[in-house]
Each structure stands twice: as C-alpha cells, then as structure tokens.
Length: 342
Image 1 (cartoon, one colour):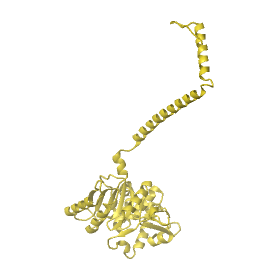
Image 2: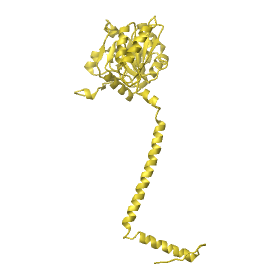
Image 3: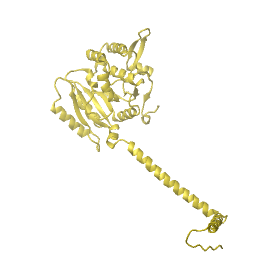
Image 4: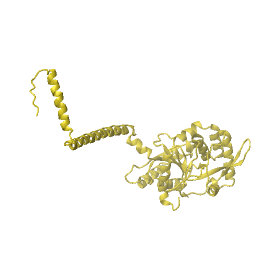
C-alpha cells in the first residue's frame, strides 16, 4: 500500500510526480482483468443512458417542429371537408331530394345553391331545406351550412362563379337531378385529396380526332365510346370534384369569348371547365367508378343533335385555346373492397 502525506498548500514537483504515479497505478488496477466485466458494464450503461437522453431530446425537438408546421385544427378539419355546389333551375322538388341525400354524406361542410331564376328562393323553401339538413346530417358532426347564390340572369356560367365565404378548397359540383352514394362520394373525395389540381368525377367523356391537317377537327365521344374503348379525356362537371380556385380562373382568367359562347349556346360549360383544368394541369382528369342515379327527366343530352352541338363546342374551344389541351387517359379509380376484379 502506498501512503501519501499531503498537506495543504501548493504541491511541489515531487508531490506532483507521486500523484501521477498513484493515478496510473489506480487506473491499472481499475482496468485489470479482474475488474474488466464491471467496467464494461458501467461503460455500456453510460452509453445507453446517453443515447436515451439524446433520443429523447431529439424527439422533443422534432415533435416541436412538427407541431409548429401543422395547420390549426380548424384548418385541418376543413381540408377534410368539401362544399356541395348544387346547380338548379325551377325544380324545387329535385333540389329538396338532392340536399336531403347529400346532407347525410361524410365531409359535407356546406351547400351552395346556384339560383338563376327571376324570383329569389322563398322563405318556405329555405326553411324546408334547413330542416332537412338538420334532420339528415350525420350525428356527432356539425350540420352543413346552406346558402343560396342568387343570380339576376339565367346563364350556364353562373354555376362556376366564385363563391364569397367559401370555407373549403374542395368543391363538389352537382346537378340537382343526379345522385351518387355517400360511400362512392367518400372514395372520390379521397382520390381528389391525392390529386388536388385534377377534376375527379363519375361521368367520363372523350374527344376523338376526326380529321388531321393544318387545323385538326374533333368529334365529341359520349358514354358508349368510352365504354367501348376504355379511354376518356373529360369528366363532366354535372357530378365532379375540383379545386375552388378554378371558379376564379373560369370567371376572370378564361377568355370572355368562351363564356359568351356558352351563354349564347346554352351548352358546353362543362367542356369549357374541362378545357380550363387540362390547360392548367397538362394532365387528364380522374374517373371514379360509381353508379350515378338520375332522378329527373332526361336533359339536353337526350335531344336530337346533342352530340353534333358538343362537337362544335370542342372545335370552337380548340380555336380559342389555340390548341387541344385535353389529355386522354384509361385510368379508373375503383373501391377494391367492393370489386371482384380490379
């Protein structure tokens, strides 16, 4: 055993040398083979505790940063909801059925009714729709709001006017005489959330090249041509999701000549919107498989010469857009849980 008599004061060189030798001797004893197991265990515990402390600190920092970048709860909730934009005209019975159906669907934030009649909606109609929404909306969720957007003139462009006070990015554009199930609506909305600049809908149509040359001409392809070929380049806005920004673009950025053509022809506002979206995205829309139920009488699509008029619209819009922006696709979104083959 080494005994050192160390007194207070500044140690001299000899005492410092003795301390150094003592420290070396103790370290040798500490790291001798007899004690190596305990030292290794101690080092392991120290490393483990240090790692845990650093990981906890790092996770705290990452968690703080993540919470900082997350939108507020209200904003996040609105991102998961959509506005139902209902186009109607002198069919209050169909409007009531439409609102009653969609009021029970998940994710509906509000109803905006495009009203283009000489007389404003009656208080009785307004109250009836509010009562229907209160009765049919999903329990445990906030009842959707109801607003009438009243227009002084009957114009097909009214359905794409910008909406004051709109809370959501997503707009579900629908005519008052078509219905789709809430489950299929939810599927389509989730598809739209994955491609927020696209149009996502249930009624596909196609443009077909009819003749080449210096000025190509096109033919409008209805449902049967889509069914036969599996190709489409439009989804009709009579029942489709799109971003609310396109309302602004349609009304204020798209050439006035196109809106004038739609107003005069009383047709093709849906083709004009398809052209607009395709011109912005340079991409096709997305067709969602779902059964669409028509609850009203046949519309203008059943009239003689409808396809010819639609073809004229196509070619006129190609001239005004200075090219064909529509992009063909054969992709179809389906619910794999409900399909035998997918």
